[in-house]
Figure (tube, rainbow, N blue to C red):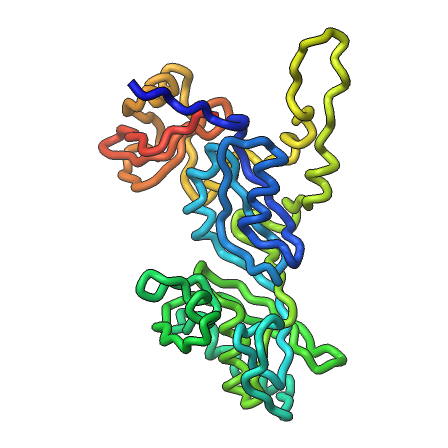
Amino acid sequence: MARQRKKKGRAISGWVILDKPKGLGSTEAVSKTKWLYNAEKAGHAGTLDPLASGLLPIALGEATKTVPYVMEGTKIYRFTVAWGEERSTDDLEGEITKISSYRPTELEIKAFLPKYTGVILQVPPQFSAIKIDGVRAYDLARGRKKIDIPPREVKIDVFELIEITLEGHAIFKIECGKGTYIRSLARDLGRDLRCYGHITDLRRIEVAPFTEKDFVTLEELKEACQPYAKPVQENIVLPKWNFSRLDALLIETGAALECLPQYPILEEQAACIRSGNPIILRGPDTSAEANEICVNHKGKLLAIGYIEKGTFQPKRVFTL
């Protein structure tokens, strides 16, 4: 019989809402956070480009089961577009591919914004993580190969021009659904305005249900790492550091599921669910069928499931 591999790290669960700095990749940010928490597993709910900053929701432990729900959440970005140049990456990193001396007026910019509001078709950037025949678009683009990327439907609820800077750059705020490429918006809007454009600054400030008020920086995480005092007795092995201050910065796993109906349950019901068994829910709202709900015990998330004929059937059980 094969020996089971011992899990590395702590069984810690919750969300870290990282204010990712520019220059740091999302995967690297997750790795640093996982290492600081000494967590068994970690993941994130929506990539941010290295040149972008702002809200990167990082899930630890059991919170990774709720990542798909956060991925579906509305995103809010604030970004700056420089006119006059289109670039291969649609941001500052790329080579200049087109230039124009024309600069649009505020009225001209605002006149085109309704075109990009609602459900629209959008072609992702050449340098993106979209797969073409199993290969990432950015890998093909780095090989100087022009790729035909099919357009995709994305949803944009709000698209606002905030201000025009002294340099003539345009600052926008956008509220959108998953899969929206802000770099593509800068590219397409620049073409419509006949002046070309690219992103010079991009910051994500919300991924529902998380907002700026939930932000924590890498510096704050590092400062929260408290080394243990040297033990009085010899041969006592202590963890690398005391995690109490770090753990206090976590947001509970269940916070990611505010979009779902919530039902509190009793101890005996919780025991049934932990064994993977259904329970009968009682209350005014439990007779109707429901595709997805949460049940909570003692204020903490216990399971996601559905209601069928007054019975709750668990689909995902959490060991928090």
